[in-house]
Length: 459
Ligand SMILES: Nc1ncnc2c1ncn2[C@@H]1O[C@H](COP(=O)(O)OP(=O)(O)O)[C@@H](O)[C@H]1O
Ligand SMILES: N[C@@H](CC(=O)OP(=O)(O)O)C(=O)O
Image (cartoon, rainbow, N blue to C red):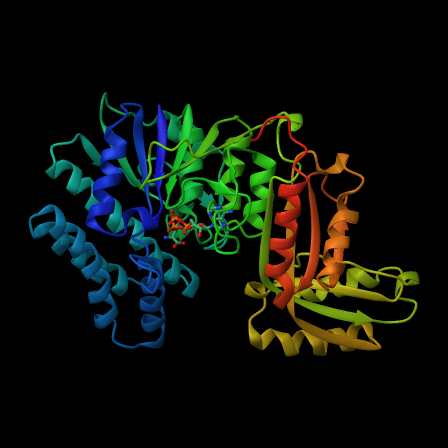
């Protein structure tokens, strides 16, 4: 059997939902359908999950929730109308959302999680109703019914190992298709909580493992994973085969097409993931696999870019000789629950690279004050325009000339490397650059990667 997940863009309108249903029913092995909340219908549209976040803001601020709640329900009504569903389906969703808004939560994080989860909950309810209306053997199944239990803070939860056995015990009746909302689960106290944004990919992966699926199909709005983000390079090379490790590095560093945490459940059991396009379902897509023969693929598999970083540069003479210096510094980050991404250091200098999502504005000043008091730096400065390029390929470590070729190109284009890290991972090379030069840098490396393919057959 196959687990099949549809992303928000694939379920944004009635016509898209119809395509998704046609894909599911075209293959009898597609028995578990994981759905996201309706996504953007066009580029300036707002995803339902983002509307729900705005709704939660209003609940927290004690403001009227009616206008945004109506906007959210209208998204479901549009799909229901497309299929000519009776009014009670959307009436039920409306009442359900009102109840969720009025409920009391243990804290603000759970409130946000419970509200943001409703995009998926209501879509799974609606799509099950649509499929039943079309005479298909579909059943809504909640993560609770499957025994999917998680630990940790909302937006950063981790699956509990016993969940896989619970899912395996779930009885799928012959021929039925179950519709499962992605993105949320329940913790041990029974509270609704969510994975990180883009987390429906994670639900799909967990279910693929729990159900011992032969394949996890992930349907989105592009026909494959490309060697670079198609917003940076028009019509880039398609990647036919990626390893788990390559996908994880690329997804973490900017390939938003698949959530980087979604690889983890399938790694241990070796289930392959097929990224495919809802609008072009016969295209083979990209296959994510445990391993590949590096002699038959491009030297550089992909180049990811993340511009969402900030660097904190710290200078102090004799820093390297002082035992426990970095420890004291990291203790301050821990105090504010900030995790850092990279920590390049020299004898008297060090830069802490932090994802901006980790650093709300009000913490910046407090961090500086604490650092000055604790480690007495000679200089302390923020770099607000820090971008990181991640160049990934299974065989990268075999090439002695890679860095030289890239740096020659950078010098021709006057692109200044701010940080280089090679060797920490055998399959990636990381280069920090100024944010305003980042896209030019990606294009330069992509052009090089196409010139220096080193392949016997293309991937
Ligand atoms: N290297 C890449 N290859 C393909 N798509 C990419 C890549 N990097 C970023 N993307 C973006 O990922 C998008 C698909 O992910 P997402 O919007 O989360 O889809 P979904 O709604 O299906 O979950 C694509 O439309 C594309 O803009
Ligand atoms: N709807 C959630 C979860 C998700 O996975 O969505 P999408 O499949 O549209 O990326 C979010 O926006 O984060």
